[in-house]
Image (cartoon, rainbow, N blue to C red; front, top):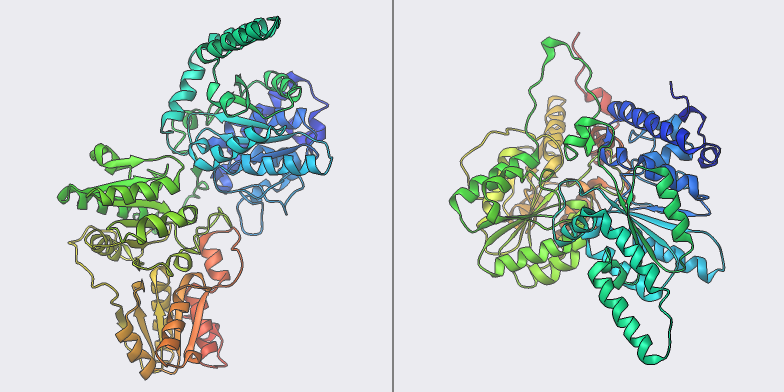
Length: 637
């Protein structure tokens, strides 16, 4: 079926092909990507847009001696295909299969582990400096999207690289998109550069002429330099990058392998940092993805046909319930504003943005700025809510401490995708936020067990006179997703869900419903567990905890986050500080390791965060010889 692709087992096979054959190969790779990703799920539009660029890089370079650093990494599927992993592609993002992002352990051509945005230039500069220090050879290319260039880290790296003058190359993959449409002055600037290709030709002609102006004495030399500088600002596209110390080349057609390789050859002659401005089309070759690249940024596997008698109504996701609730709150509070870092759809804020455009701010991929902007809005008298994925909030930790909590500002941080997120794997699992947020003074941290509680927690948060965090998982809500009347919750108050005499399970957030199922099954088998929904990680319900320590010999905590410094650690600290026996506490959570990729259900099972796993831990804490299978309800015929 794939005449050309079937013969590619590594980058060296590309070099046997001519440009016409490489064009056919690009078509086959697109067909292969569409077919494969429809089965496994994954990032579609971004990878369709970088097929020719990836072919050109591996055709021209000698990887891994020459090094390609992929920013974010969700654009690197063609790179994986061309570096010997085509036959494994049906395992992409599946448990124990290919990662969805470059991974150093997976393949020698994956130079750096990536997953978060805007890191490639820093990594590439470090590799270039190490190469020069060790007296080694090899070209180094960082491939960064225009969306990732909205992050300050990219410009910090460019500023340093321009000052160092180190020889390496940056490819700016300009498709006018991150996940959603790009925002900001940089996006507008790049659009200006690409608007008139004639400017680029004129730039080359002017530079050719200026290089031939002779230097007859200092005065004429100074005059020539002034002319050159003046014309540079008047004519040269990419002057921003030139002023940062990079040689700017472009714009370049990112879907023309021959043109790309010719410019790579040109860049190789320049012994300083080079920025190649490459224009690509996100979703290239697949019309639905070209027309709606945001929708096709990440796609789920094609659903298999189900028995019509077993149809299941899909619930809203936590993100959508959050967005709907915030919009409802904003209807009655004109001070409520919403902030996102390039994730309007992912965080459920699309409808809010349409209804209240003057109270909605998408700052681009700039989480640090998002948090401090939120702080400024709060200080200015607004009631701001900043929605950020847990894994990306890690990038704004200093801002949470210094700009939010130190000033005890009344604002809300909605922490989306908290806990296990599934197929995106290690770089995207939101498993550290309890631990890094809990030590900060002034902060309130709450985590809902279901959709109804999310609505009440958000209502409580926007009416609290200090920093609050509402932390919720990815996926469909537990419980009801229906709109409800708001009820303000008492800060730090837990809720007892099941009475019991033998031991107590203290669960929080996404662990509450699995713990509830576990407790109910154990009750049916003669055990007597109690179940508490902690609701708050900070402050804890100290009155209830004191009663629990006096009543029970075994206290089990359950949380979908790392054990180090998390909710269970907070309960341990409470015991130590109040003279209770910490040996009574048995903690369930993620051990001291990074969680790999796989479905959310698979990973929760692996780490004993489902009902079966919680029963297993309870039996161990009780020193029981029974197996989970003995308690688990038998399937009915």
